[in-house]
Length: 389
Image (cartoon, rainbow, N blue to C red; front, top):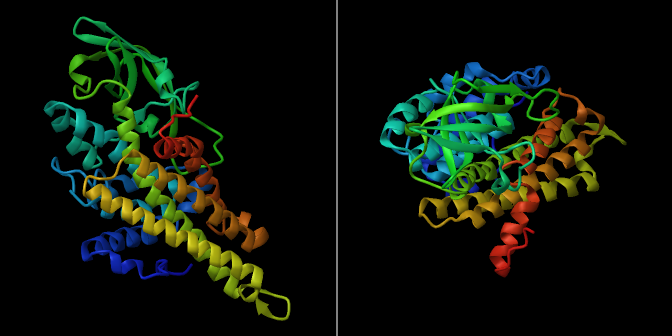
């Protein structure tokens, strides 16, 4: 174990203000104390560290970039730094916080009634309630418009039927934001734990995000009162705008995972002796890997910061965030693979964090819009021609 001192090749810290640095340091210390010493065991056992939920609430992680209802009202850059440090600990932990804030609190904040906001936002922000986001279905991931979940009006209620899959926090959620097709379009429904006909079951056998709860949701004639429907949005704009918020956090989080792998490999290479009693860090091929890694991490940091500044000025749109998520997750996965190579056989042992990060990043590469989908989003932006079909 060695203390994490950060990764800064081009004086990146000079671009941050004092508040942003303080937020980052607070999360960094939390991760070093509460996560790093235990995460390999949790991942090995497939255990989500639920005991950290109230601690993270006290530190203001949930909905940190939202205002009112107890939320911290931080800048989007400060929020991004929270995601970075959490994912440096583990992608699953960042996923939990990201889902809570960007996929559950954000849509209630943006599209909910005042009753819904008062009922859920303070409880979610304080960690007294856990939320999940039910969009993906067993047969529809990249094409949410094909969803089969249906909501039929029945007097003052809706009756929901359908299945959702790969839902973070599904089985531990107190409220599930379920997206289903109603007569007037796709709507968001707040389904409370214990509602008749609603059930959640954990997905077993995962090789990735093992310290995270991933579930499938089943809705069989679930009756939801109209007052539990988000009134402020109809259509795919609702869930897609939520995904944009979550993808932004992922873009920062991937930098944290890349940092963790880079630093671990660098420390290892400086002390691993091979051939002529020299550390492998002195070898040209190894130095080439480090040169590539630090260059890509630095570029990812600068991209994340610039998009964050744009977002704080209200000028970041979904295509900017697609570039952020696409680039930063890809380079993080490449950094993890290079770091694994540097460690050789040790790279697959959970004595080191690298293989866990690499496995996690395989999922991050796919969820919240696959790498290929973000490629097409950027392609449409620069050509003006959609190529999804």
